[in-house]
Length: 309
Image (tube, rainbow, N blue to C red; front, side):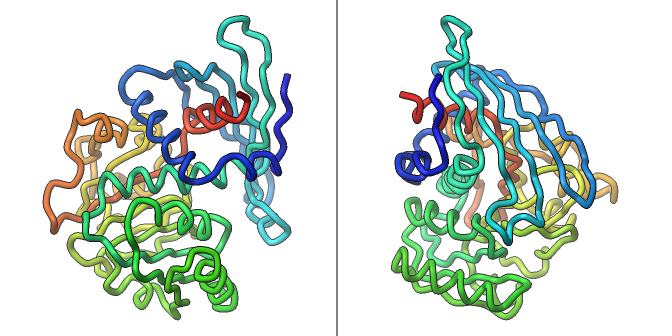
C-alpha cells in the first residue's frame, strides 16, 4: 500500500494535469462511469465538521475521502485536512493513502477551470476572485490554462490579505493583478467571477453581475453557508457538478427554494453532460451562468489513481 504525502502530491499533480483528470472524471460521473453516495457530514463544535465521501470510478478503483473541515485552522495552514483511501479494483485490497488536503486544494481549482472552459464566453479576459485563502491562488493557477486572462482582481474582508494574494498571483503567473476595496470594485467589468470565500451569507448579489458573466460558486460545499444571493440563482443558468448532491446540499439553491425563487426544474444539466456534448452549456452571449461546485469524490479518485501509478 502506497503512502503519498502532501509534498509528493504538490510535486507531481500540476494544474494542467489536474484539469485533464477532472474533466474525464466529471464526464464519467454524468454518463454512468461512476458510483457515489451523498457525502456524510457530522457537525462538530465551533463550526467545524467531519466528512466522509465514498465512491467508485471506472478505471480508477474505489475508495473514500475522509476529511475534517476546521475553518479556523486556515490561518495556521489549511482548513481541509484528511486522507483519500483507495482500493484495488481487482483484488479489493487497500492500494493507497493520499494526502487529501493537497489533492483537494489542487483539484478544486481544476474543476472550476473545466467548468469555466465549458461555460464562460470565449472572449473572457477579466477574472475576479472573491476570497483570499489558498483557493484564490489555485483558481488563478488553474483558470489561466483555459482563458487568456489579461487582468485579475482580488477581494477579501482583510485588505492586507487581498494585497498579499494579488502580489503572489502576479509574481507567480505574470497576470496583472490588483486588490479591490469592495466586491463591487472587484467584479466591475469581470467576465468570470470565482467565489471562493468562507462567507456564511451572500457576498455576491445579482445586481452586481453584468449580463454574459460566468460565475463559479465554490466556497460553500454544504447546506448552510451561502456565497451568492437567491436572485442570482433565479436569474442564471444554474449548472451543478453533481445534480443529486446540489439538490440535497447546495446551499445557494436551497436558499432560493426556501424563498420560492427556484425549484428542481430550474437546475440545469450536470457539467459532465455538457462536457460530453449531451446538453447545452451557455445558450447565449448575454446569459449569466453559474457553476455550483460541491466537490465530488470522483475528482479525488481520479487524482489519487494518477498519483498511485
